[in-house]
Each structure stands twice: as C-alpha cells, then as structure tokens.
Length: 481
Image (cartoon, rainbow, N blue to C red; front, side, top):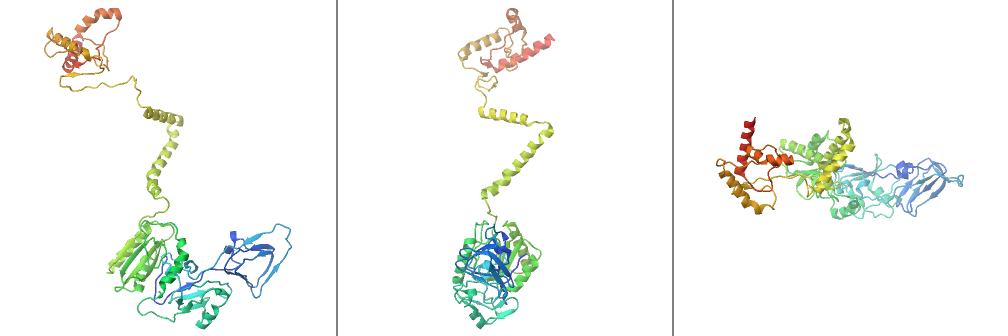
C-alpha cells in the first residue's frame, strides 16, 4: 500500500537524481570506467557529473560533451595514459542526459502513483532535501516563482534564506532564474495552502514535461483530476469538507488499506470545490478490479462512521492492447485449447490422425459440393391432396392420369368390395409379395422372364386404393400361411 496525505505541516520532498561517476546505473549496460579504459560522454548532457572523492583515476581517453561539467574531487586525481593505445581498450559511455528540471515530478522522491503531478512538486509547506556535500547537484529552476518552507542539505544541515539566495547563483543552478524562495509559513490554520497564486502557470510548466509521458489510455472512463496532466485511471471518493478533517480522513483510509498491497491512495483537499477526496491508483498493470474493490471497502467504512458521500467514481475496464482482442480472446481461446487437448488425446483412444483427417476431408467435401444432381438417393413425398391422390414422381405420366383412374374405378366395380383398391408397393421397399389376382395375372410373364413386376411409381396413386392394397396383401399373406 502506498499512502500520501496533504497534512497541514507539509511533507519532506527529496531530490532524486544522482549524478555520480561511481554509480553503475549512470553508465550504459552498467559498465563503469576501470583503470586504463576509455570514457565517452554524449555530445550534450546539460548537467554536472561528480567524480568520487579520494579517487585516483587513470584513463586512456575521455571524450567530453560540449556543455555540462565534470566535477573533480578535492582529494582525488585524474590521469591520462597511453599505455593501451595500440590495444583493444574497454569503453564506458555515460547514459544520463539533462537538464534535470525542478518542475519534473519524476525528480522528486514520491513513488505514490495516486498523487497528482502538481502535488509531487514542493510547495509552500514542504521541506526540500538535497543530497549531501559528497554528491553532485545540477538543477534547472522553474520560470514561475515557487515558495517552499525550508531547504536542507542532507538530513541535518538547514540552509538559511540568505545562504540559499547565494547558492542559486552557483554552478548547481547555472543558467536558471532565481525563482525559489522561502514562504516563512510554519502552520496552516484552516486549509493546506500548498497551492500558490500562480498555480496555473506552474502547472503549465509541469505538464510541458509530463504530458509526453502519458502514453496510451489504460481505462475505459478516465477521470479528469485537477492538477494532474494525464488521464487518471483508478478511483475517487469525495466527502464534504465540513464533516471531517483531511487528517481524520487519512486515518480512516490508513486503517482500511493498511494490508492492501495492490493500490496507492492519496487524501487531499479538492482545490476546485469544498470537498475532501481520496484518490486511488493501482500498482502495476491497471485491471479496474483492485481499485473498485478498494472503493467499495472505503465506502462501507465511511458509511459505518456516518460520513456522507458526495461522489464515488471508478474508471471502468482496462483498455490495454486491443479491446476486441480482450473481448473475443477468452471466447475463442478456451474452445481452441479444448480442441487441442482432444486432438492430443485421440491416439490414446485408438484414433489415428490419418483417420481424423480423412473424416474431416470427406465432411468438408460434402458441405462444399452438396448432394449431386444425378444421385441414386431420393425422397418420396406424400401429400394430402383434396382429390385423394398422391403423385410420387415424374411429370411425364400426367397425361395418362385419367386412364389410370378409370382402370382403378373399373377394378373396383368389377369384383372387389367398395372401398377396396389395388395393391401398392412401397417404391423404397419394393416388396415381391403379390395378391392372388396379381399372381395369377403375372404367372405367365413370370415363367418367361423369371422376374416379378412392381407397381409403376411414376403414376398417380389413390390413397384409398393404396390402403386397400395393403390390407388385401396382408389378408392374402395370412391365408397363405
């Protein structure tokens, strides 16, 4: 958990840049200069570099920049040697590039991401702490006048105001305006007055440096936080300023979030309205879930204490990467993983990949080509027509429809009971069983051809006759048995 509270007594603001020769992070790939090595500085560095105290350096070559400075130690030495002039020498390249601005939030020791950019810069109630005398200092002061409570060198030595004005003309602040002064304030009676009258001008200087670092939007509904240069992703809870002090609100947040390692929070006065607010930001990659959970817990704690809530806002889902990919990825990714697991398990159940590929190829061919036009397979459609006839197939026999109907009627009147019809054989089944009358009629032909004829499926058939034929065939079969 990262915390920050805008207390009336102010805060300690630490200057971070370390411009020391002996610091490995200041050199490319962490390669610090060794004895008889070559040192290269960029063409422009816009700051000073401090050599270590009591050091005795021996280099084969050193390439200085066009600006900046190299600060030699009082008790140290720097010698140039050509002992390895003809051999392959190791080179060390300086990595840092200045200038280092007073109004750059990254130059001040506040790692709390929930703090707006403007409040990370020292204000009239803050104490500024610079590195001690054994470290190099190079600062470009702002163009806007800024007041601070006091300035210290290291943790103990406090610089008087008159001495500070003398220091601003030194090499540490070369080519900078004399804009930093003491506020003389020790305590705020009503509000934390860390905001100067010319705050808009100072914020413009801050955002000129900070805005290019904003990067891609990370949340769905970003907050527009006063005194912050970029869109704010996280959450905000606001309460009326007359109901609670900022210190008490900070204590409540501290109690609620003391075991939460996933968020930063910051309690402050809202400069544009009579409210106090707690800003919440997530550690690491924004997810939206951690900040929403923190807001819900804080709301329950405040309501339990009877503190009214003015506003509680979260910034929604993350927008990192492709929105479409984040939405459809789980939808299609999980089935693909399951399919891969199934494919890997097929040999275990006795299925070869060759067989699987063959099945898929046949299925794909069927879907792509469909059923062939001249297929041996087909369907017979029965329809309840008003005239009681069903046409099974073919248009070529419609001309003989009347003759067949007359023949059917004559067969009915010629010896069969009313309602009886001829035997109908299912064209799909093609049964060889015949009625006695048909067997007698076809006996001669059967002896000659050795085959039994079946009903012509191209002719229309009466449903009544079809029913009679089926019943007649069944009765004949029973009698024969």
